[in-house]
Length: 295
Image (cartoon, rainbow, N blue to C red; front, side, top):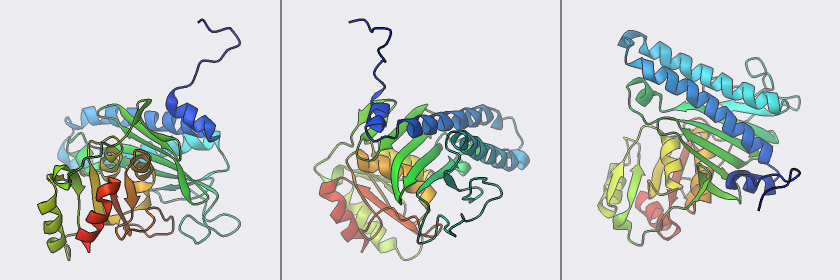
């Protein structure tokens, strides 16, 4: 049936889910910001091969910084009162390059974080990017009252756009996704990244039980891949930061995985220090086994 002039077309499923949570505008803006940053990264990525190695680092640093600024400017234009926590600059103010804690004295790592804060990793996988390995991503999350409510991860090299809304599901390019639930632990393909010291025995225990392990060089993208089953599980009990996991952890959880920190506790804590975050994301039937193998 043809739409009347006054009828509005149905929004894509992710935006419909966000509308139900009163977050449609926020998701639209986050998707736009990710696309803009991703376009810049692909444009620069295609010319990295023509740059001598000595200057490659400078180009990647510039792309990282510009990507972050594009994301922040896009979001801030729509939501000028919101705050930011970004990997490159670490700032948290309404005027990112200059602001510090807000008037109440809270910062993203304080015990009383702001009500709304955007957590950004503009280019996760910079070493891959600099070396021509097409595994990197843009990560944007909106945290409200200390909980991730929107997560967006863009894989620019494949033009794959993942997103999730808390309680509204996970999506890949507007299509709902779920992580396949494999019955046997021995069938699982796992992103396994354990610290080099003190975990060798535990790593061996995990490897013996699973099908195969991989490390991608982009934690945010690998964790987002759990949301649709490219990885069956993600195991990294230490060494991450909140900007690595804020968006992708929500995507994995909304895709049906059980997500905790490395000890089985709540997976998201805005007060944890940089590199003090761990994640275990796995099918619910196997999650406890991974935790046991890591002990």
